[in-house]
Amino acid sequence: MKYAIYQMDVIVADPAANRDKIKRWIEQQVKEDKPDTIVLPEMWNAGYALDQLDHLADSNGEITIAFLSELAKQHQINIIGGSIANKKAKGIYNTSYIVNRDGELVHQYDKIHLVPMLDEPKYLIGGEEKGTVFALDRIKMGIIICYDLRFPELMRDLALQGAEVIHVVAQWPTSRKDHWTALQYARAIENQCYLISANGSGVCNGTAFAGESLVIHPSGELLVAGKQEEESTVRTSIDLAEVAEIRKNIPVFDSRVPHLYSV
Ligand SMILES: O=C(O)CCC(=O)C(=O)O
Image (cartoon, rainbow, N blue to C red; front, side):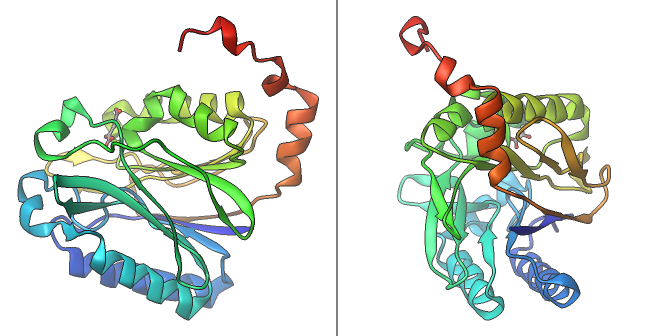
């Protein structure tokens, strides 16, 4: 499966301009070397304009789903739709939508863990449903959003459900960049899966985003990395046979002793 990852510099508080930017980026990728799957970063509709989300957030994902679905169908590509600020009955969530090549919505996920350091709990509601796997081109996959990366239980659960590729969509700041990279290596190695991340870049209200979107092989080897802090595109191909190979050589899942773990 051929991937193109958009390490996007999100325009703060301008969802229409961000949609336009994504549309043009996808057209460019398709023209250059058509990917099977593209990945967008976290909160790409509004950026981290948390105090303006009331009027910037999508409403039940209506605009976003129609937008992603149309692009997916038109270009026959799968879209891991990063995440958006999304107003639902109880408040605003940080929601990810995934659509397949036929433009069908195959999965949605609300970010479970909200970031206290960014005051997210003041503006957002944390997801109330567990993460589940979905399939694109018959490959079992999962997604988590940014701060979720600090909670190994979530990705382990996805791996135990059969995920072989796990996506991390983020707007992770440069100030904690070492955690961003170290945690991704750890999650890929312990779960023996491909880890594919799309981080934001640029600066929002004085916070610089780290970039360095990574693609990590199930062995823990780095396949490719985005530039530091700068908007860029990361391209890679993944081979699912390698997940089985690594899991056979180091049979971590067979060696687990769950009855001795309290979490
Ligand atoms: O955990 C961190 O240090 C960063 C998390 C974050 O920025 C986010 O979830 O948006």
